[in-house]
Length: 420
Image (cartoon, rainbow, N blue to C red; front, side):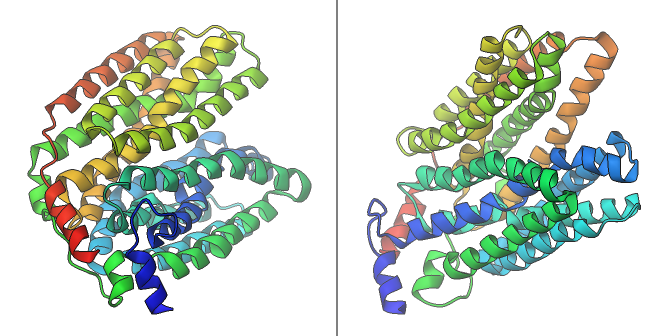
């Protein structure tokens, strides 16, 4: 078995039998039932059932999501450091176990908000240990020339989960209640995420030699934090997250305020999810062919166009078009950030640096909906602030032209040649 695995690992990245594609498939499954898909996209489905069951206000329930996001921001750099030090398996497996049990434990909720908040905080603490931040570490050791496509296929799992899991949760709630829905979702994380990770998630050198974390080429995390390209990436990601998450959260209420039916507004939201899924694959392919900063510029420019159009949407067509453009930004960003980090800084401290970017992304993602909500409460309209956010996103996209050509690509390729 070990000889067969070593043979598969030495095949070309373009060969479908290459072991790295098995790692991609397993990571895609793990991400599909991980924090980003299973917790984030199903959270809203449980708001009304919890409100009816316990009499909690929607604001109080929403604070649970905020606590999870805040804890995610706090813990992501530490999780990234552990990933670099101990390897992905030793981090993902315990985090996925805690995450799955934590989701399932919500079925035992009683009328105590502190119990709900404590569980959300726990889920946020281990969240990125059961998300693409962790899986990207393993994927990046298996691919160089096809890294963009590999990351895109992993994130396609997240897109698939975001489309299927809310529907599944809603169906179970309607037939068996919200407690049964939490049990099923927790079971999916444990039943799908754990076995696929245990069987296939290995770094390339670990599969060929032993299971100790392998040293990699690249900068230390201290050098990365002192570099100009890193803060360009963070700045663009931060602005994009504020704009994108704010628009996502207020998409349906904005459209219904303008006379679009709730059903048509939901269709626009579906268009966003669909375009996000398609964009992940297309952007991943483009990253393998063109300079990443140029691809990122185009993606964020499309995002800016979507935000500007959303501020002026008064029909189903313009609403769907705006949502589709925003979906391109949501899907493309998930590929771009880890790709650029590997190209500029290598794999030595990849997860630590990725964790830091996630902290900024999470804080910005929490700010966006609040800023837009306050703007609406103050002015009765989203249009002015969406116009400002579109302009800011355009300026952030232009910052990508300040990034130099890849500085670490040759060292990474030499590492791959040595292993081949």
